[in-house]
Length: 303
Image (cartoon, rainbow, N blue to C red; front, side, top):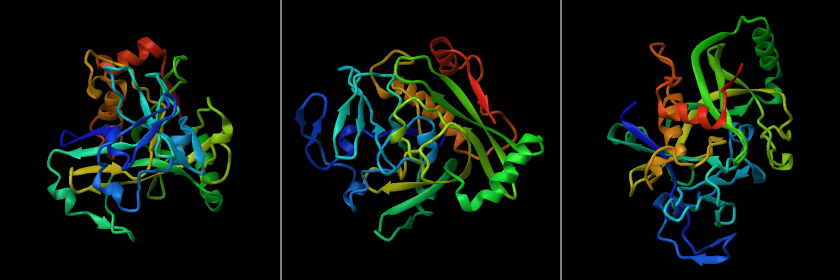
């Protein structure tokens, strides 16, 4: 657990050209982006179905906007759009942008040995696992079986619960937990869409516009793009949404934010297979849990 850290991308890491801050209408010169983004420009990313179900907006097919690190001194909060634009949303609790994590290993030597290369010669790594895509129509038999076993309470739990946030901007928000189940040697999680933004921006990979019903997501390995110059691994897809960038403790750095705490408490632990020796729920004494309860109310649990 302590050999890696999660963060999100910085503004200067996501673009190789001058961009436009949409709301400020002023041009911003950017530094050279990560080397991996120069190879067929994989700066865009797709939302997973889970990112859409947890509130992430999509604008071009399944391409989603995703959060970037804020400038806390200026109180500016950014996301990356599909046109290489940085958008300053001006709101620390803006939650419709997705989370595209960046993974940094304390010692990445062993992990680099497991790299593979795609057809564009981009180095990639599979590390950790997460619910990502809903089961499709050709999995209808499995979905029916999962629903039946869930209803009669015979579906086996793995013991793991995934933590998600929900809530729009400054409106009340809370924590939701998704329960992981084991069936036919595979892991699944049932989840109901969190709908609080325009539904025409919420089309899932199966073609549905996110109605409020239970979906089953398969837990799959996470694929990361490897940037050789910085020794960083960038999530190929946006994995989740609903997390703001408000301050959780004193400071002007990213490590002081709700997003950082979410990534390095909940998501960091949720990425790892459940070992059976401890819960992945935070203790009452943990700062993030107290912060969320104090500011956003009660937790909710589904599945």
